[in-house]
Length: 470
Ligand code: AMP
Ligand code: ZN
Image (tube, rainbow, N blue to C red; front, top):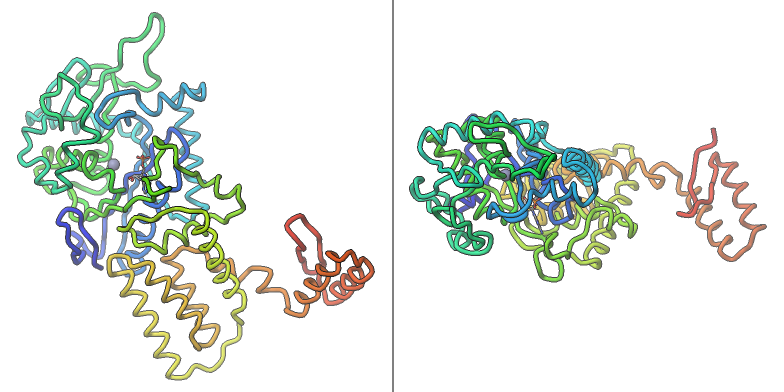
């Protein structure tokens, strides 16, 4: 498999440390609110990558974190913890907020057919590991204390940005502008933050722990290094996240991990481009975002969004618009309908068919192995649909591809269209027309015919539904 590595800015052949095993870590959600559909583009990328590696024969060990503490409103280690802010907004504790939005995240991911990594770990379950990592950094002389926390001294880590080779320009602007006068360098970042002094008789935070440096909580970046190395070892094969994480979060992950272990942290960095809305990054702060629920409420299938995302390469910007989603849903439904029409009987396979099947299979593997060329893989699926290979083999081939696409094409096989005989479907359509014309006599007559053929029709707000006579 070949992947674009943000570290070297090149497409490289994947050479895992212990083939056929591949270790993979994805930065997961901060569970203070709903994840928006922009976030889900990144999680779908991680899912497609994991599915592709498995499809190509690798044994994947994947980890995703759940950030339930320490992610501050500003990436420059300033402002309130997002979880504590969410707690105030909803008059709940930070623990309750984390539990609530973790469940919603999992449910949304399931609707999008995202196979979440087997290891889904919460930052608050790994406080000891984070403290241990910080202690190592302290012993090695990489830290200093200020009035609000313990910081990583980036000047002690030779070639902080150069080593990371991650967008050096990004380091000088944006998130780093807010200045903390006690920081020695603009790029230094908090490893441990102290809880602010509590109000009389109360406490300043829901989440806080004792540490060798004082009561407080871990900085956001340290959780990913601690949990990734705990589960996957000092050097990981692949690390995934959105492009916005490159200049700060991932650069800091590299610095603190490599400072602690003296070994490379990650071999291949895979970054997904943004989903834009109205030409701008879809984000909570710009209030130009949609949640999965916004899509469902308009009657769209969540998997139509997945189809839409598959249609753009992960390293290109994709613009979210309702007409684009509508077009994706139309194509997706057509594909499901097509599955429904695939007969179950096997007709004779000729050598020509066999060659075609092998050719399609090989092309599909080549496309996903070439830095996840999903738009081309989807186009190939339509070529399979239009080909003359026998239905059963076509069906098997499409289901095979779906192990990577994750469009739940098997649902098409079980749809009403697939199991109801065409004669019955035609009668149902005629009856619908009669009903629209308020021809109740004809409609009743057609119902009886349908019943005689072994089916019951029920009129629902979503249209007629069929059930086999019991
Ligand atoms: P956050 O919850 O803000 O930490 O973001 C979770 C993940 O979603 C990170 O990997 C981000 O890089 C990614 N992300 C945020 N906004 C977008 C977007 N508009 N398009 C794609 N990915 C995004
Ligand atoms: Zn992370």
